[in-house]
Amino acid sequence: ARVAPRASVAPRRRVTARAMTRRDVVSAYAALAPLIATTRRAESATRDGDDDDDDGRRRAARDARANAYAPTRENAGNFAFAPPPSAPVPVKFPRKPLEGAFAVLLLRSAYEAIDDVDMLPMDEFQATSWKFRASEWEPYKYLYEPLRIEQGKITDPLYFDFVTFVQMACASRAIPKAAKVFEERTGAEGLVTVVRRDPALMDNANLPEAIAERCGKKIYERLRRGFDRGEDFDVAYFKGTPEPVSARGGKERLDLAVEGMRDIAEVFVRSGYALRISVDYDLRGAAQSDAEMASSADRERRVRVRVNGPATLWGARELVSRGLGSPSTEYLGFCLTAFLDESGVGSSYSERLTETEIDMAWTLNV
Image (cartoon, rainbow, N blue to C red; front, side):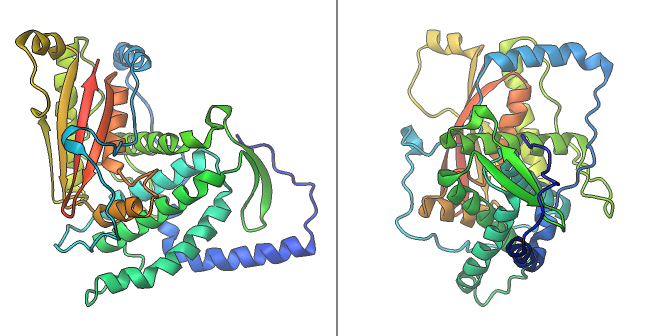
């Protein structure tokens, strides 16, 4: 929640000097400007009147079910997860280039999610991100020599992997000392605004999940409605993005939800996020009796999502190796959860990171 700007506060000389330094930093940060710039033009959110009943049913079902947006990496059956003992090796195979609009969509959604939880001044976050990126850039380039990585080219998976790591690493490092009330400076003149965090998010331990939820909802909404990058660009649309499931029955709702997960995975693949994504029913785990299987058929599904060659593969493992994996760069998982949430389907998932893929185990329920 932002309080009215303190326009009456006269700037002091030392504040002016700090503002000049901040402008210098932000100017140097310009290479990342397309990633963090936010357009405040309202994005289309209109709905057809015929969908009102479906929306009501989905809302009631959603309110009755919990959805975990962030993945877990705890020991769980075949998904026992052990953080790598050292920094991960670079990705040794070629990955697909990302579509420019899609890359900006993911980065901007994550940036706005961090901003939405009001955990630190965003002018401070920008400056910290630039400094951290500068300190990490040369070692990262060295990993991939003799390959050449163009700084600022977010369609290159090598650079996208790096810059998404920087973004979430800075967020993760800020969470333990996140302020609940702070001053934020905006605009060229450094207008001061007092920001107070939502009382529901006063516990810093809740911030990673809150960021994941807001990020997932922004991604899914923009995939559905179109992504407006600003005045200099056409609105980007992502064909094939499914609407939330509106089926009444539990079994039918679950089956349609799995189909919707496949459709979203296909949108991510077409946009260059991964080489391949498979979404299949997960037949692993403890054996069930016929009676148990019949009982759970109408209310639960286990799904395995395997993301081969994602554009975030190195960064996801690097975050975990440094103990900074929360919030993560699991954009697909965030988006799938938002779709399931809107469909009135409860969900949670765990993930296992390897040198070639991200392997997720999902549980869906109604």
